[in-house]
Length: 265
Image (cartoon, rainbow, N blue to C red; front, side, top):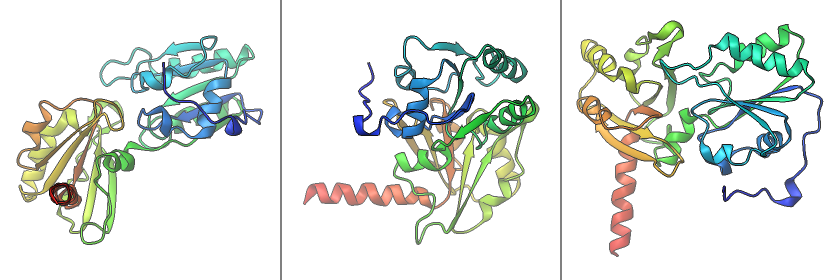
């Protein structure tokens, strides 16, 4: 059973007439859900979820709610997007309220925008509920700030995959920027190509890097490395994971050293 319990004073319920909710479920820790996301999950009739939605979040779904697994794991989509859209529409036409649970935030490298467009074109009242994106919160969970004075004054979030399973390497030149952090989503499976292209473009092999797996979950792991060693480190990294490139990775090393010194005092 989940340890999560919403305070009674905040159990306000869903106060609108939306038929479909595209819910950002964040990293997977149920306590990082927004209050609105929690209330909605407790209230709807039908939930569609994929493999990135944690077991802890699924444990707060009422037993009476219809739960439909729709896959969406890379290279193993149990249901194509068109079928997911049709399923949502089918249940709405039967008079049910439907929630589509999305990992992270629905509009950050998810297909929330596509689903919203489809449902809007079908005349279905739909509400998008924001979630915490792993692009900024996964580094946070690892105590790596995407920006910090003296380390980085800007950051970029990219996806290593494009529509049609194409690999995106157009962002590699950003690794040359000083005082800049690059966060890469869905990059672990193509790390070999990322490293090869970075080397081709003359990126310094000493470029600090980090691999953050299963952020916020019980099996979270953080591996610190460099561009030179990131490919080797990726071999043992769990999924889902994000990549972080930039001097902010050094911040964690400084933090760890400071923490060790304090413990010794």
